[in-house]
Length: 78
Image 1: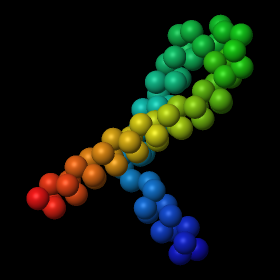
Image 2: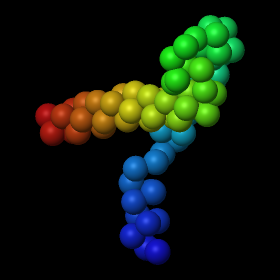
Image 3: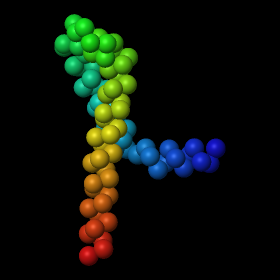
């Protein structure tokens, strides 16, 4: 149980949660505007679009957060 708590604490922070919420929001807006009319299985299914939004939101915010962390680390070393 401690391993799971440590994993969640290290890999999920407020940036990731914000990114996932924004990703889901934007993917649902996209699905409502044009996705549900598509023949593509990903665009046609709102559940898959939700998972896609979660994944993309997490990855984007993880890149932003890790770049910010790296920049702070470099500034502290100077």
